[in-house]
Image 1: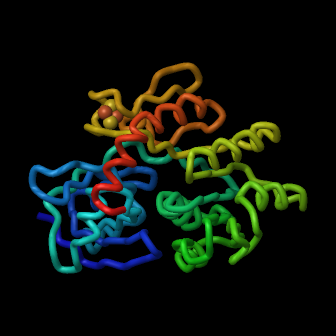
Image 2 (image 1 turned 180 degrees about the vertical axis):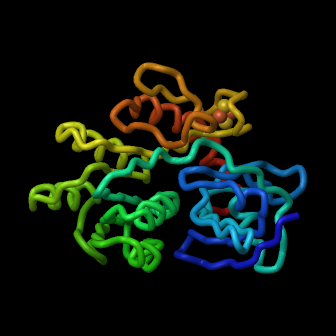
Image 3 (image 1 turned 135 degrees about the horizontal axis):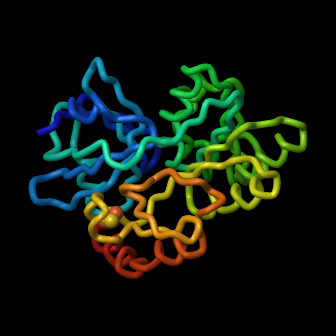
Length: 273
Ligand code: FES
């Protein structure tokens, strides 16, 4: 059993948990993820590692309540335990030794972005960050990013914080103002990462993205998380989840993401989400 050391509600349906998981905490690196089982015999779901503390033997997960298992997880309180946490899974992000990086986090994608920006900033890279969400209320990790980023920019669909529009609008403004970045790390909804990459490809700014296809076993055996990267088949759970954005076949991935849309919607209705 793995004890929940801390639980925090970040926004309407996004929550954060700090979980005691010594084996994961000892080894994990930014970019990796864990597979969580809330109750014995239950569904196992992949969740990004949003932070870790090796001295406290803990990992932090941030999750959005989108289905049965995340709802079950959200019913757990501080001091209670979850049944299993396996990891670290996947490859650590390939963080290059560059001078200036722009991190772009959309929605809950800000969570996996944070440990990468934190580690880069600690190693002397100058990091700017754009966070985007539908409204200010849904925006997460502003304070945490504020501690490690040199400049912070915001975009919301309704204009309640920062620019009214998308993170790509802020990105275009920054480039138009003459800001220069050696690399961009974009993590968020597929459509967001696709738009960022379409733009950065034109300018030839290396861009890494983190993919979250449907995962089942998380060990490269089921094929559920198959993605096409530069015409090669890769498995996001063992080869990723971070990839060179220029090489990702976003169209295929977007089609595969909607494969269970009907079943997912029906199930959400049944459990009242
Ligand atoms: Fe099964 Fe990646 S989740 S191969």
